[in-house]
Image 1: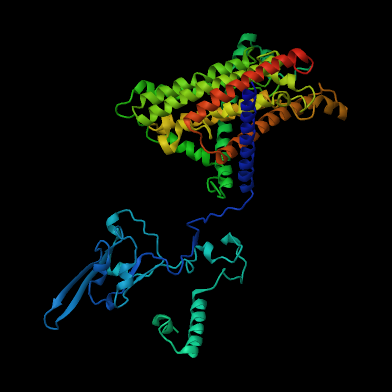
Image 2 (image 1 turned 120 degrees about the vertical axis):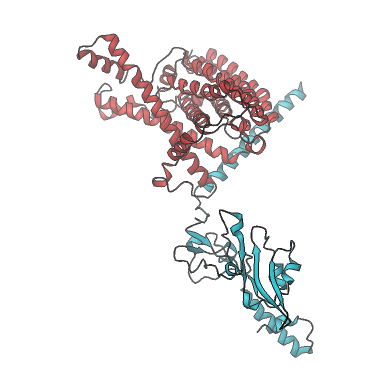
Length: 217
Length: 372
């Protein structure tokens, strides 16, 4: 008899707990109703892509030496490099270059390995097309620069969350002259260089830091 | 107790004065409230759809529909128009007749149930004596339609959804009916008008929710389950069943399901407000209020004011409950089918039986407060 009563009390307690948690949950959703929307109203407002955004690839025809390194480092050998050997000058003559963005995964390997820096990644991500074949960009299409979000008069550019000042969650009501949380990449490089020179003064060792940072002033 | 505004009587009298017979006047009157209720039900659905979208958006920190009309008010109209002009597809190996009858059988009982929803003393289509019982009987036709459309679609998801809908409706109908029975026991009548009237003796203190708090919760849970709203939307659980019994439906037939779902939600909210929250009653008694101003309750001005206040109060209470349902949708996770049946049979059924017994004994012990 006592066992049964215990069961009943446990059961009632569970039911009351469930009701309590339900009310707690409801209060959370209710609280969310008074918060401002955090969504970006896309065609009218756009987020500014970050500096290292890997968007559509830009290509400079004149810089290219047709070495085909981009083809070799591409996971699916995507870039098509159309060149012929000029017998007289004994040099490669580039005729066409194309990348199919319907198949590209935007890994950036080609950009990374290009010896003449003729490939680069842009901030363009609006690649919607009615026909997938129109995503196969030739060297002319690859040479176009995208419209920057910040320079487009019909678009209100908004900062991404990581670029907002500390404590600000909504890019719409961004207080003016307030900088993002943390340091800028350029500030970090400057600091490293400062330390670097101090270290050089201290023990004249140069191989602690890679040369790239040293040469980047 | 005064009878309030009787539109039917004034209408028939007016027509009779024009020289028509009493029967003809009555015949002319009959379609009017039907049309009015049909229109108000559809408008109620449009408002509910808009509220659902806007409140859902607010709960998720979005904006929601914005460009169709001011604040997206016309969005549900646009949705309806889209469904209206969409191609009506019947799957190749589906059963044509059952596939078409299914959605109709779901929608018709729901609309028919509006027959008994009172917005005022005489502001309902028909004050049938079996009122609330009629609603329970009608609502048990619905699972047949759901099962029908699920079975005839010739699709495994539809069939599973239909079966779930039937299982859910049948198991939640019993505690629902028992909760209603406790109310009926207290008010000694099945008529919705009597149930509301008996609650409006002393403002909000005489509402049934104070005497039937457990019944109120049971009824609300069961109503949500009957409407297939979250957390009980397993018949159309999109993560598992695509869209349940609606999977193969498109165009106007899908719109019928959509409409039935929302009409059912509004209807349930209205019935909760009728059964537990004093229906058209204002939190403060109108009789007391009119005596305070010094006007007789029979004064036409007071009558019109009271009637419009009654309609507003009914709708306000119903929409507060709709709001709660929408909020619950974004708060609670979906229950599993075994949890659903557990809750229905092992929790709600015994609790509602105990509730009924306690109500009965309280009625015997305190006939004054519990309607002896």
